[in-house]
Length: 259
Ligand code: G
Ligand code: G
Ligand code: MN
Ligand code: NA
Image (cartoon, rainbow, N blue to C red; front, top):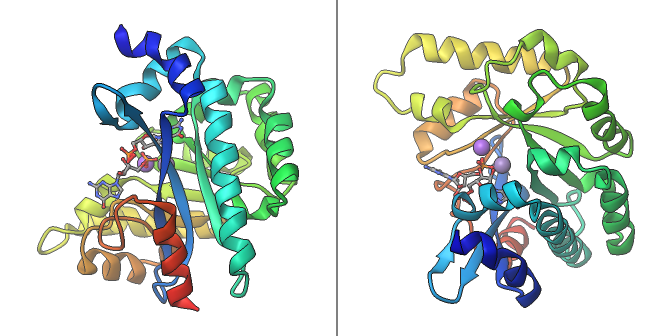
């Protein structure tokens, strides 16, 4: 595969860049943080989304150095935002971790190193792991996440609700945030909203809160969805209704606008 063989040189040449999508508080619409989403500016094919190359990078192992670069870059960016604006609590930065990164023995040391060199408060970092990556996870896999959580790093379960995980299992995971999958948000768009969908989201939120987990909703595209999800008790949201993923300056101006 042409893209696969081009990946290592692309990393050396600096062809990857990061877009940031804001996460907002559903209560008052202020910015809570941003999720880092990597893109590849390919010299022939133009800008490629992560769906085009993350699976290839996973397969070849390049995801480890690429993921380290994303983490370093996103943390540096968050540190910059927080240096110029710190009242109202630090802006959070969310970074996705793929299963190979989760299994990589250097995960904790690399993360500690990136945080120390940037000076970012570990509590301002949230690592997103998909629900499916943690299904059936044993203690060996959970230990690094536990160590990171003990340092104050938040761990989020991404795409929650799609992985058929045992809800009782949530108790033993070192997770502090559930990111409710976009499909639930889409369910809040029908008129009238399906009462079963409402009950399901209500149930997830109540379980999450009883376990001291925050709930983030993904894929909010309309004000009606935002309002419905706020009424259901969700804490933070992300989606095109607020902003598409974009350049870091945009997050900076949104935060300054809140101040
Ligand atoms: O906007 P979007 O097409 O950017 O992202 C699609 C998916 O790609 C996201 O759901 C996310 O899980 C994944 N993704 C984006 N950036 C990264 C990254 O830096 N590392 C990993 N492992 N996945 C990412
Ligand atoms: O990590 P994850 O898979 O959740 O990444 C979020 C993905 O969802 C990215 O590909 C991003 O571009 C996409 N996305 C973000 N907001 C919206 C939205 O409001 N609607 C839709 N359809 N996709 C979104
Ligand atoms: Mn994510
Ligand atoms: Na997701």
